[in-house]
Length: 116
Image 1 (tube, rainbow, N blue to C red):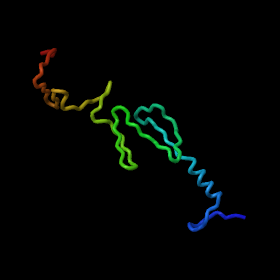
Image 2: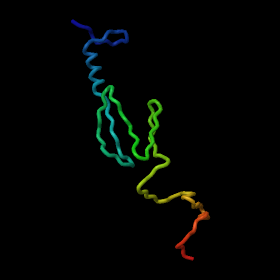
Image 3: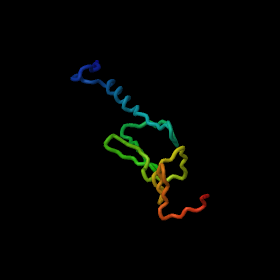
Image 4: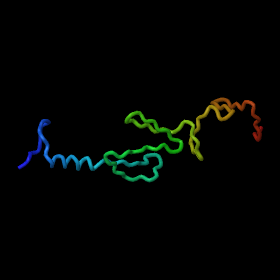
C-alpha cells in the first residue's frame, strides 16, 4: 500500500513526510523593526522566503559592521546632525576653546560681549 512514516534515522521517508517538510520550509520566517527608543520609518512584518536576501542598510550617520552572521549597528563617530538636544554636555574642547571644571581657555581668540 505504501511506505509508513519513518521514525528512525535509517528509515525511508514517504511523500507525506516530504510534503510536511516542504510546507514548513515554505513558511519562511518573519522580520520586522521596532522603535524602543528611536525612530522607525516603514515598520511592517515581512516574510522572508528560502533563498531571499535580507539587507541591513546603513542610513545617515550609521555604521554597520558584519562578521559572518554577526551584524553590529553603531552611530558614526564623526556624525553630522541638523539639531541635537541634550540635558548635559561634557566636552573638553570645542574648536580652539578648551573647557574643564575650573577653566575656560580661548587660546589666540578674542572674547567680546562679556560683562566685566
